Image (cartoon, rainbow, N blue to C red; front, top):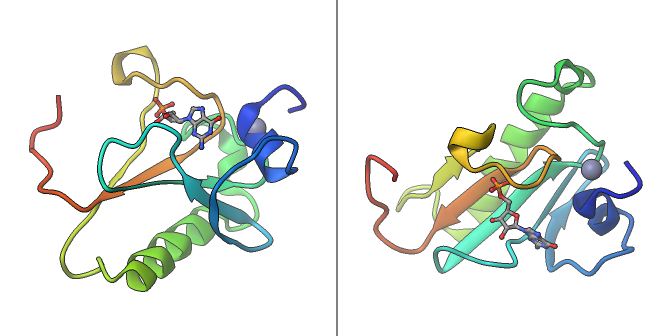
Length: 114
Ligand code: 5GP
Ligand code: ZN
């Protein structure tokens, strides 16, 4: 989508601190981190949210989970711990309508979340 901020980061029309990308997925630093490590993992294709049926095409769920595994291994947090969060809808505080996995790490994370 032309006006979508995450699509613009994918197209390099907006700056992003990109830490990993391949043909299907991009990983970049969240602009407003809530922990020492706070990354956003997105499909490069504009998928609206986790309920978008388009997500189920092109093995995108696998590509996203593969990126979670790769980044967690590269950062050395696969064993020490991290959290993956997807916010959907008003009740969850979803703000950007392009699917993104938050990968949060680097401090003790409370449970249950607020
Ligand atoms: P949501 O609330 O939709 O799950 O999360 C949206 C996330 O995107 C927030 O954590 C917010 O800080 C981040 N964000 C919003 N705009 C930008 C941006 O332009 N660049 C980056 N890197 N992150 C952004
Ligand atoms: Zn988009």
